[in-house]
Amino acid sequence: MSELKVGIVGCGGIGAVHVKSWAQVDGARIVAACDADGARAEATGATAYADYLAMLDGEQLDVVDICTPPNLHPAIAIEALKRGIPTICEKPLARTPEEARQITAAAASSGTLLMTAFCHRFHPPVEAVKAMIDAGTLGRILMFRNRFGTKFKDVESRWFADVEVAGGGTLMDTSVHSVDLFRYLVGEVSAASAAVANYNPAIHGLEDSGAMLLKAENGAIGVIEASWMTPWSANIVEFYGELGVAEINYNNGATRYILQGESDWTPVKVESGDRFVKELQHLAAVLRGEEELRVTGEDGLRAVEVIHQAYAHPVG
Image (cartoon, rainbow, N blue to C red):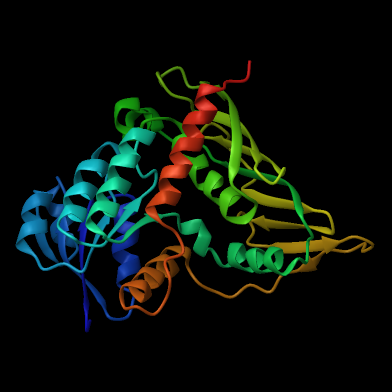
């Protein structure tokens, strides 16, 4: 495979991030771009399409990158997979477990690669702490805490606040990443519950803030928080093990740990790199047969299942 020919569906928002990231992947090129906004598709410099079916049938693609709102993921992904085109799909994989299972079933039926775009797995600090956990430096992980929060300006006028499009609020949009980090770094989820709230009176039918409590099959406990309503917020992941603690601070870029018997934190040496670029570089390496896939469609399905399990077990 000399040059990877990429077709992207959805060129605004996260799609624009993917367009810039693909440009930094050696040996890959976006040859086709599809968007309801023709100008956005044309701005990629690739052949522009308004109809994703026309793109899938009109191009010889090595991979399809789906960056649309969640309600469109199943139809696009299933059509690409039916054609045997390897597919990466942005999170959440779908709005419901049923929709996500339709996508993973299409991948299994056609024997085609399906990757969920959980970019945080490729965040260099996460990779560094993963290596520490795997090496046993922190001992058995007992507790996990993650908060991602912000003030999402004008969210009520965006598709994120439309439950028919998004499938859920902050848990589905933001905490789906957190659930994947918990599964990836701590253990498979056995139980999930949630407390959700609406503080923005213009948002209806989904939460703008929420907290989740997870229990892993191995006994570890996880607390996950997310909000679109906090003007300042910690954005942090913390791991509490039997032998020590590690934390990743997304706000200041610091990653550090402290072990039992120590009085000072030790900075973690972290390699440079952008998680979106590294994610797509990994996918390119997988398609060339150079690496094993690190995040699958099943991972995307499990994250949606856990979110819905939490929704089904409300606190309060």
